[in-house]
Image (tube, rainbow, N blue to C red; front, side, top):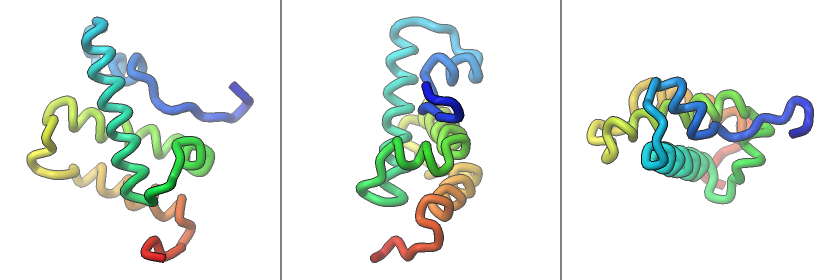
Length: 106
């Protein structure tokens, strides 16, 4: 890893943060939720946004948002109440950083 480079959140890191006991099944579940959260977040900003681009622009915020959304989906797989307020706030901040004031409808 290059100096200063941020990588996407790992399942192990999120499991440690949530104090979830590690098992092969839980690792797969958490990794799947991380992957899904990344796709949802990037698609909410721009259809062609790559993980690498958003990590370069705002990696810490992206990882925190992945963590928040994956956690929300861990406890409520169908997001019955939609995104939490915290997820919405972080998504708006990330969108602004990535788009840099561009109109995303263009």
